[in-house]
Length: 253
Image 1 (cartoon, rainbow, N blue to C red):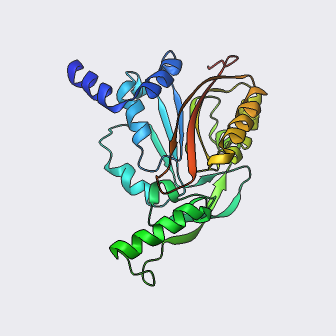
Image 2 (cartoon, rainbow, N blue to C red; image 1 turned 30 degrees about the horizontal axis):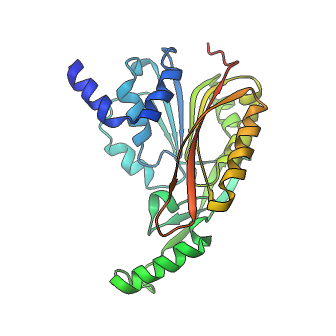
């Protein structure tokens, strides 16, 4: 059993995910927020590594209505997984969410980033013309749906969640709004580790990274590492980077 567990752990987690877990493993009753969970793969990796997972709680958030279908298919027997088909934002309201039917995982967002990417639109058009995969009149590449949004502060207050060991955010360009909706928890040192993907046009990525780090520095977070910048697609000007920050003043219950 231990051998099987270790093999699963080795293949499922990459080095940066293992590093993240090392910051939170000392707390036996972990609270994990997986924002932008989609298929739930990040949570799945954490659960496989967490020997105290029976005592931990995992809150998954994604406004994409298809996400829950994927979550149910995960081979995870854990009653402490709570899936929320809502968007997280700076305010509690209703908001338009852009579903990308062509590139669902990376293209769906509150920010129609790929839709505004000239390089992506040009290459997509050429791709469709070359391979004649879709009839553009019949294939609706983007769907707009209205979704409920909440703030992490409000969500935690209503559910009496007093701390978050790990806040992972992968929101396709919406990360700044989500963090601003977490101000009360950040101010009171109730968030331990933040692992956030920043996404932007290539020439704006450095300034966005600096903005996010400076924002979290104001709440006592120490920047630990930036993981390699990667292209969303070879056909896109969008770039992303993962940032790991730790609150040195964090105290869990």
